[in-house]
Picture 1 (cartoon, rainbow, N blue to C red):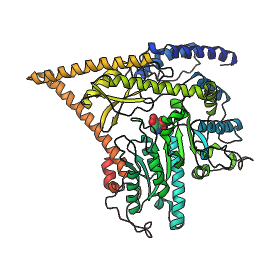
Picture 2 (cartoon, rainbow, N blue to C red):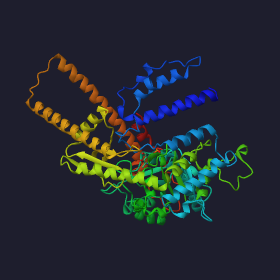
Picture 3 (tube, rainbow, N blue to C red):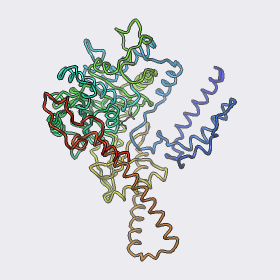
Picture 4 (cartoon, protein in one colour):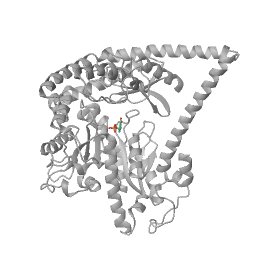
Length: 566
Ligand SMILES: Cc1ncc(COP(=O)(O)O)c(C=O)c1O
């Protein structure tokens, strides 16, 4: 494709994009397809000869779009918002065209410098403590864009791990192997934390203790303190605490004001994952939700969730960038440059070497909307969530299951989990709305998140009417089934027996899947909780704890290994 063709197809593509987004509500929000559908539509071999652009675009509509869940659809209320806006799309387009690989200042000076400046802008917008900003005189802090919140959590855990190993080396002497010291490290998070914390601990090969939050799904200081004291008694070293502001399940907030002082006392790195909710802190009235952030060593939020920026754009700030880079610096000659000492080289701030020019889209968005425009957008979503909450509260068949502080409402029919599962699966199967479930205080709840960029009162009303109508249908159907079951004196004929057999197979398969899930969660907890992982845990004496013979390495015991991998 040459420049002339690109101009033409580029313009056509812009038209296609605008038509897609303007008319998205004429589509089903979720596709009506089965796994493997695309294999039947796309040849198994790549084309040997070039194809016409129009033929390719034709396939987009006929083959790709029919298999899409439309995240920008006004009836999409699942997960959290997937940020999107025209300025952001254009920013990404330009970044792609520039096509630089910004691993060091020298490799792409503007790419590096814009990232630093825009992260300072955003840090100020959400009112992070000055220590996190690179522009403040004498500051050791600064911000960086990563691909995902999961990556931010992992990077911070690795930084904390490096600092902890250094501390232990000073305490116990250089002769101890790092692997032996590693086995003493303990990380903490709440049961409500995102699974990326478990993943980070698994990759980092450290133990993770998953703590019980209070009835509001908030991790409290005394619970953390108790766990740490127990672990210290057992010779372990608390080194990392991952807290969440705006949990995935029900948008709950860990109590940083209580947790912060505990971390200060026992020394672990305190990380704050505010992947969704952090964006709302650009509105001063929401900033009370991050009280205690002054204790944190690091903080992340995803503008690609709730600030009109397209994936990927996960912003992360650290109070001490040297502590981050100490964990991640490798510096071969071919990547060094004459400003290595004075300029920021973002390759030392994360895992990948290659980095896209992602700050462009963030810059475009902040400038195009202004801080006030972005605040209006957040406030409108919060208002609409309250409108939905009011609808739920007005119907006595339902209950609201979280404190609605931002754009997420968790609700359920008063009744069994099974009833609510049935309701949600009916709604999702209809293709008219899309929501996902969560478990809040051990109850199955349905999450309703305000996601669409231009969501309106009408969209919320439509969603509520759909939920209400389907609830009526499901309740009636369940009642009917109950009555039928009571009356039925079942006589099995051949067909019934075959059906029963098939049901049995399905039930067994489901049970198998559940067992696997259990094994997985057992594994995580086993790695997490030293008492499960090693019931004979020896209280290690302070002075000889690192040369013991106990099998307390972070690997699992043979018995448990067999159990998990059998
Ligand atoms: C609180 C929280 N942390 C982390 C994540 C993971 O985000 P990412 O997909 O950017 O890794 C999510 C995803 O929704 C989240 O809600």
